[in-house]
Structures are given as structure tokens and as C-alpha cells.
Image 1 (cartoon, one colour):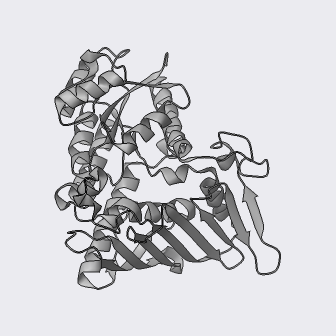
Image 2: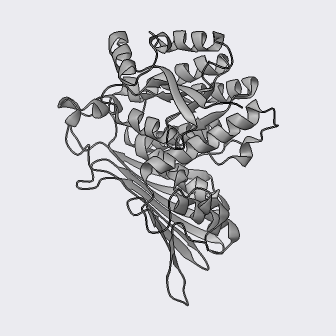
Image 3: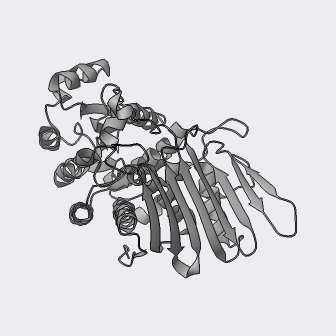
Length: 387
């Protein structure tokens, strides 16, 4: 494959934080170039923003439908190789579907869709069209999360017994959706966010982190779902008891009304021989604890770490590895898969370390089961995982 990999973006326009995060991450390695987009539902704002990004006017479109159609019609050496979808949740399905049908690969923010039917349809379309589809559960991109995965796989913890995972924020502790906060306004709106706010937004990250590191899927859960801010139509706090495969027990906390918390994502995994702990706000360190010897602290970038961790480390030991790098690691893996595909190789996507459309399906299932449990006040089984 000659030249840079080209991509377009849907969403991520003015005042959209996550759009710029994706753009910074995609350009970090210098081999991916933004060439087209629809950045806002307001065509004038979209064109103006695209011009600020120095994109050609003929690659700025009025709608994502037109963008998918026009890009697919361009010569192979000019059209986009993939699209990045960073819209509010309710648009994910149709945007992704449009580009998959046009033969264009997709990178999509989570949650993948708002309904199980939509998620299952995207899985079918990806299989039918042989499309590369990545979901940006970016926390799996941290080097020390990958080290945690390697340690669990090596058996160093012994037989797993318990997992405690928490993602706590405080930014929705007041009704900021009525104060002009754009992110809050759509994330708390059922018409755009879907059936869930906090579980979909950050609980899904916690669920994926457990499955990524341990490989365990949820068998059943009991969710205590709460809305603390009066008048808010969706939940802003959730606490769950979780039964995983192999008898492993878990606790999952997701909250956006925990005053003073910023992005407190942390995980503790307990085996019968050792345990590990990782914290997103101090991501370069992984702690291992034992019953009969001193605690060990693994530090990012060192030679004693696994190949999986070292291959996703971007800067030398002692320098902080950051959030942008986690997204960049996903983009790098997607780029490798696209280059392999374009060069005519038989690409086994299982060999690439990024969340796929099937992770998206699992995430949507988790959200729906958690909300169902919370509303009914009962344990809910999850017995239809992706094989």
C-alpha cells in the first residue's frame, strides 16, 4: 500500500472534545491522514470547520449518506480507507451501516448502537462485506493494561476468584445539561443516548476492561440503578454484583455523580496465588500482591515486561504514557490490518489487538441487561454471548 492511509470523520465538530482526541491520535504515527468529513448536522458549520482543518472543499459533504456514496465512487487511490464515527449514540448505527455497505472500513465510538437489533445487524453487515470494524474502548490501549492481560494469561495470579472494577466521575453531580453543557445535554437525553446514560457512557468501559484483561464473560448480574439529580430521565449512578464464568465473582461501579472524581477508572483482580491492581489516573504502574512476599510494582516501558505491553509503549520509561496514546494504539492496529488487507494478505483480525464489532455487540448487551436488572430489581442472566 503506497502513501498514507486516508480517513474521513462523521461528527467531532466545533466544541466536540472527543473528535479532536481522535484526530490527534490518528495523526500521531504520521501514517494516517484526515481528508474528508461531515463534522456537524449544520452544513455551514461543517464546511467552516472542515476548512479550519485545511480539508479540500470538495471532500466536505452535506450529509454522511452523501459522503459514503461519493467517497465510494472515488478512485481507489483517492477515496478514504476508513471512517471515524464520533456522533451522539443514536446516529452510530445508520452512519456505520452506510459506510460498511459502501465498502469502507469503520472506527466507531462506544456504545456501538442503542439497540441489540442494530448491533446484531452491524455484525452481519461486517461479516457480509468483509469490513474491518474497530470500537474505541481506548483504555485497553494502555501498556500496563496489556501487561495485566499478559500476567493473567500467564497464570501468575493462579485461579481467578474476584474482580472489582470502578469508573467514577463527578461531572454530572449537578444538572449541567441545563447550563449549556453540550456533552451533558445529549448523554442524558433518551432520544440521543438511548436507554442509558452512565452505564452506556462509562460502565461499558469498565465491563470491557474486565473482559479484555481476564477473558471472562458475564453470566448474570444484579444492578442497582439510581438517578440522583432530580428531573434527569436517565440514570447517573449504577452499582452491580456480577457473576462471571468459572465461578468468578465481581463488583462493578459506574457513577457520574461522585463529587470530586475526574476519571477514576481502576481495577483489582484477585486470584488464589496473587492479585493485581491498575489505576487509569496513574496508568504507568501495575501493582502485584502476594500472600508470602513483598508487593511488586511493574513500571511501563521496562525490558522485563511482556511483548504485548512493550509493543504498545511509545516513549521511554519514566515518561508518562497518555490518553492520546491509547487511542493511537487502536488506530495503529487498525492501520496495520488495513495495510495487510490492501497488500492482499489473508488478514485474521483476531491477530490484531483492537476491540471489534463483536466487542460492540457484547457492550450493547451488557448495557441492556444492566438497565433491565436495575428496573426490575432482579438478577438477570446473560447467556447469549458471541461465540
